[in-house]
Length: 438
Image (cartoon, rainbow, N blue to C red; front, side, top):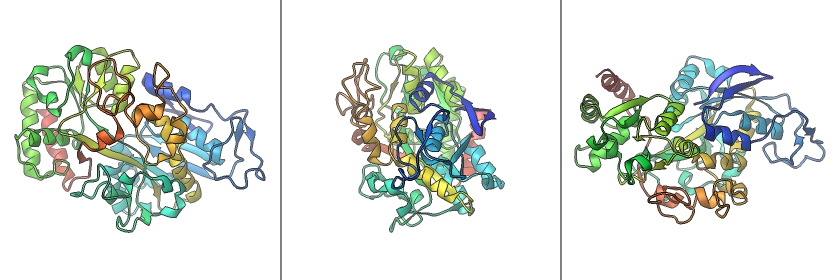
């Protein structure tokens, strides 16, 4: 993740930990100094989140946007561009998923207008009355939403849990008000050093396979790591688990006891804590494979290291990240403008090279005219990240032309489960501590 520095001119500056995010920042906008202020009369019919010509910025409104979120979304390049377009002062704080929720629950929500968080953590804020519903008509780019976020017939929809619709809408049947407005999304898998392993990885089981004893890294997370392990054990016939993303206490016991056995056998070289650590472990070859995030793999590749993202036969673990608006915020209009800005298209195009998808199709307007990713300059960024590049199928071997896990349709037709908030997260945490101390 990205670390805070002291505020500078109202902004929190952050170290861009790895080369991929640093490169992304270089692709973003410059600071606000020297920009020409837009004449309000000329801009009467533009919306506050709409794009502006280079060299222009909107006049100051006197409103603030105070947000908190992970370093993948709360970045200066995004806040600067939002301020340039809207005229609202934009201030951000980077925090981990658990610390930001804890801060809000302790009363800190009064210091923010928006919260940018993983959907599986949002229920804690909504259920405690710290958020307000957002009418769908206020989110204009939602007219271009992907059907994954509007239809029970979409690829990736989980009828068993109702996700992702269950966590987006106050009432999924009417879809008139948001609890959480989707901001970006993806599905997680295994990052692996193809050059060291010598073949493609196609199973979560590789992470617990004795063949890779001492070469594996796993994420220190009480929900996500037991989830993928449950998916592998169910698929392999090692356990009878009903919902791998939301297990009973007995099912959690089965999975954690299995992981403890593997840990005692020396399977895991590292239990990684943050984004930069996982990048370094894979890039250095200290570990050969890990339950990694997509941007981790892309950042390792940018160091000229042969690293790939697996297409697991058990399926990917799906998630979405969203923007929620604090109750009683004095900057409601700025908060809604920020939500619209994140969905207008520029934002989604900026995070596509990190491996993320946008919940609206507006990013196509930017990506189809960009060739930042393809070294040969033949495949535009939309075809590379959404259509799979040279083909829609997952890419075997090395080198590859396009997204290693293939097209959007291939990925989202292969979902193991969504990362939901389980019925008894405290028991997950209790047993995970047993694993860490074993």
